[in-house]
Image 1: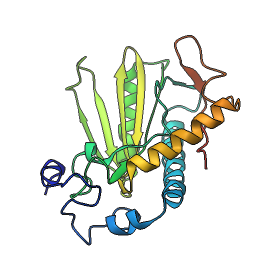
Image 2: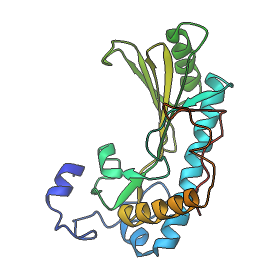
Image 3: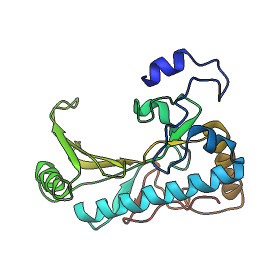
Image 4: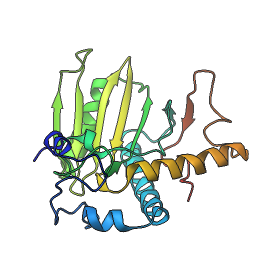
Length: 220
């Protein structure tokens, strides 16, 4: 059953969809098990998954380029996206019962971006990841994607002379709305208290320079 069909049969209540009872996410949990957890416990797990993505992403960054990358995120990467939008990562997911994290950085290489992309493609293939490439982007330049054995997804593409690297975590069961609200509240409290990350070092366009592995800590 696709995510679209699953949504169509949903009653509108978070646990009201005809979910596959034994369908497990990459952590080994079923939807019922994940949704039975308290919001605090779900947020803790979400934080661990956020950190795991960013640590895996940093490793990929360093293989491509070990210097500073541009962090131009306009919205907080702390807030998880709807797992449903990934498209069937979990067969019975809806817009509210699953989530994932994503992150993006870019840099301008000293060589043709195509060469940097080629090296990324070779490196990812050498790891045994499921790699594909296409030239169907809007500007006609090449994009390379890879899915790891544990469900992480990475994309490297050309954008106005820069290489843009994007990664997202596997999709996990969880109350996305409750997790998002709790994380946003904690983030806003940190900002109000003067925690400098995400505001102090950004330029007038909202961008900042980050080394691989530098990302906003999760507000546990």
